Image (tube, rainbow, N blue to C red; front, side, top):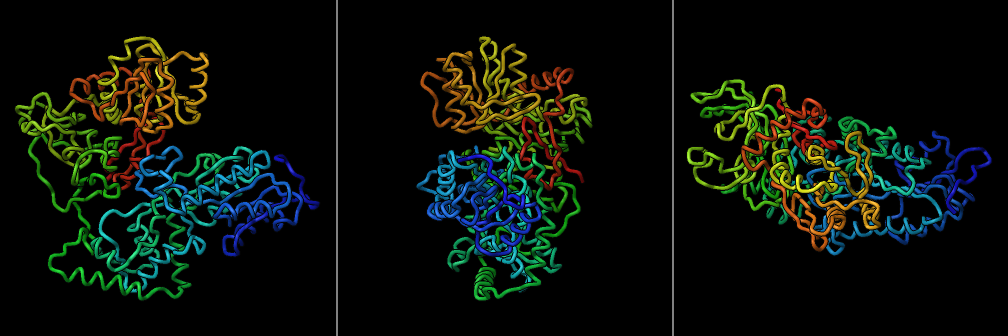
Length: 639
């Protein structure tokens, strides 16, 4: 039965490690001994405080491991795998709430994913009323036990053998990694800690890697030259070549569990881990597949010798440019295409010329990269920016004026506006190029000036303007509660709009989450209380999560005839509920101006600074898609 078990006669806590011999087993057993545990093999003790299972990869193996213990267990810790997540191209690290029916159906998942999920499910069943369990899902492990292919060693072999790394053209996944020391420390962090009982926790370094970045780190660690060569996809497949991580790469892009961070666990510095690993692989070089390297380079030579072949990216390092101009671009439907380009030559623009002080990436850009808009081709990002007029020209505006852009085409002056004279309807940054330039030109009809006192806070105007346009008329219709789902900056801004209208606000999500200003409650217990008549029924609900596990119960909580507002069409809503889609941007200058004025008023009694930031260096543009709860990060050029 579950409960505390007695220690050994020596007074030490008993631990059992189930796993194949290797460097991680030696490290883990040494760490347990240093932490005061006595290591006892399975079946040789009547009770264990901690069992670490790093061997069960099938349901039958797990059952055998549990049966072999033949004693009471306080905590069973299963080292699972990141492969429980589907192989897709997420724009941010995977979280538990990111399951999507489009690519998470059992029929479409690989066998490794189905097996890993089955093992976790079986452990939960076996542990019921018997012992506490903790499941750790580590990212890619750096070291010999990371799998059949060690990706760092893969790069080391190529850097040492001529310095040429051959990759296929097109999107390549991003991934995260973990050192063996990090995993052992994470295990000791949760061992015996009651809050970790019956929990499933991701364990990952917080840095994001790509094949290019990983190769560059290996190059720097070894101090050797590196050159990339690119093959068309058809030639890559014809040569029977494979990337070292295959489908496993994107599944490892997971978010570390907040519980681990709260308990003080911090991973080692990613750069130091990779440098040490690369030097270790170079010092202890092993036989490698020379025939595979020969195939890669033969295919590259054949491709480069064809006169009609034009590589999608330069095979040699790009020259360093000294201009301060830049452009942030992305390709519709290709998340890995998001890239920052430093312009080699100064671009000249007709006045009024504006400088981009700060730029945000919001759900519109995320949906564009996911392919949810019917666009084709590259787009310069940036529908929401803070601009400074640097060259007004003959126009009636002062140099140094701060402004935010109106991103919808056509504007109110479509007949004379150089952006809108064609009558095409679009959103800048989505349907056509936006403000993701270091310096660019924009018509006055697309600018709303902001007072200097607002500063970066003005970046909140566009998301606030879209909420005002969609919801302001609804907020004055009654005084019933408004339920808001999600922890985005829009949820915070909408909460204030609802409070200004004199209506109560309830923040909901899949689970409870503590926040000093916007406490979040789990939606299913609230729905149960609502059905029991212990809570008043909301007539208005807004879902910023895009998660069916939230939108469906949210619609069920609404009173008959209630209204549900979403960013995208929900997979299903309760009968008798009306749903509406919220615009991705402020639809006109009037809404944007009203949002700026409201921010000025709020600034007098609300802490708007907490809703904006952190400031992210331009070269770390990927982090702009990883906002902290109820805040809006922004990119700024520190050069």
